[in-house]
Length: 170
Image (cartoon, rainbow, N blue to C red; front, side, top):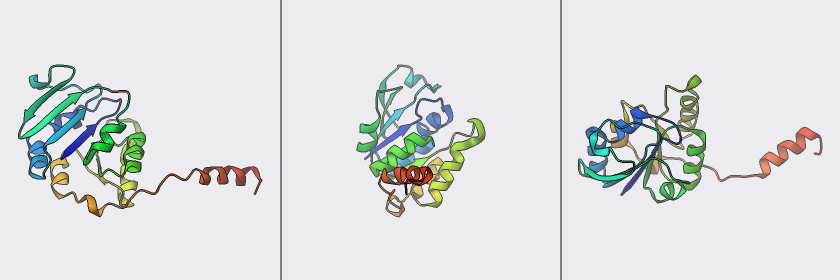
């Protein structure tokens, strides 16, 4: 099974390092995942194993592919059995609309910690699982994708109705 990890266009070294750590990779392996694709963005990886721009290695029983950026990550999100992501709104909405199970890790270093608010609200609604860097391995171990509530499909008419009401057309 495939796990896709993304940090978007930002730098989130802690999530990248946690993802390739022995506890997380072992938990993924023990949960049936044998392949991890990591989009690291501008994050720095300390390990010498990952010193090239793009690389693929075997680590703790998981095939790990690492790269910085691609024009789109839609294909990776759609092919994955699980996505682990920063809690950026664009990434969250894209993954939820695809119906791919999602674990998000808010980046606490960002201004106003807005990622935490979004992740918490969507977790309360049951659409995703939110966790911290410290709890990532245990969250993966206990994660049950079938318990997630499907995200409602996009309905563009709601916005146009709101504008029509505001303008006094209806």
